[in-house]
Image (tube, rainbow over all chains, first blue to last red; front, side, top):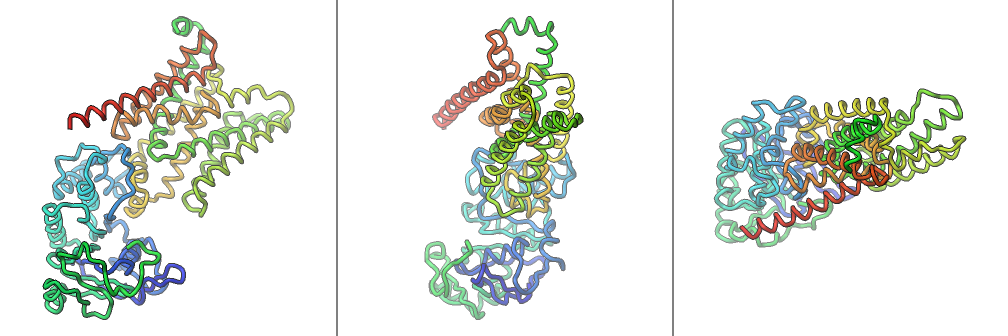
Length: 262
Length: 285
């Protein structure tokens, strides 16, 4: 992403954002509410077009790279009466690549593999509507994995997932990156993020990308000590004590959320 | 009811009616299930009422200008396809609210139909049969039309089922996965339109939506997968179609209305059954 500016009407949300992410990185996108995280994600997905600047994924615009990207939203507008099984939901991850008609053996094998990775093999035949919120989230992650994407975007991937499965999912993300996949995830849980991500992208109108070791050595020691402090990269993003990160409002964010649903 | 089955082998029009009910149930069950899970029954309503414009136009061209090739069925298909393409355009690419677009097409199509009928010389008795259904008047040519439409609908549904399911589940995600959602939305609108044309021949413009949605909605209460819902909706559609014909035959009731009333009774029974089953499951848990 180079010199990207984006605005909803007159309200500029992102200003001169530039960063470059290498393959196989596990990048955590953090920042205050209204800082532009979701807008950044939608730009990377090709749903929004930057007002200025350019975005390239695998050397091409996001809309062209779409078939190589997997995305899992924080929540889906799901109809509880929708008649679909867990297996069918995961198979949807392969639908764009599959031929017309019935799914083939490869599609079913990839689906079974993806369900096993998220610990949901035993639920394949169940109705999707019968699952809990956390289980649905894991199925949606399996859907993204089944597509065999080279880059995966997750918006709060463990928001509804219990601690044990969250830890398993983060380990899975690490495995994926060592297998050649690049993972970007939006997260508010900085304690967990710093334990698993290789890089941290702090977004608050502008953005800064840091290697996680470098950030931790400078700032996270203090953050884990319980204090609230700013990252040292020129933006207003703040790191919270992980024990309070889910409950403490972001202070000093500099602006209210306008036009985004970060 | 017994007299219906006694007369069935004797009178060809009764056999034609049964075949029409079966052919309509196939299309209605398959497409109707998708319409129901997508909560787009108003699309079917808009198409069915716009069909009057096609019927009126065909009759006007025949009576006033001697254009014989555009039959009422052809006019109905033409109007349905035009409306489907228009709605697909308005609701997927335009900036119009879907309900506003549907209302405009619904009422506009109906108004055009009324104007065409008014401009046509003579009494339009056969158009009345399209308004309220005339399954007992279905001809061999009508059956061929209906069978051809069934083949098209089933073939397209088989080929595109996975994409339709993904779009119905989450259109945004389907688009981000690389599916050409605008293209498949157009195909879906066309399928729904062709199905409505089939159903209009059985129950009429006014009641076509009921036959499209009630068997599918009933099936949706009993099964939890879309493909099974489609199969069950077809079976239920055939049952209420033939059952409604049989019930209406002896007392001389309007068959289209009786079919819809039977479909409604079956739906209510299924809703009661589904509710009691959920209560039992809740009690066990």
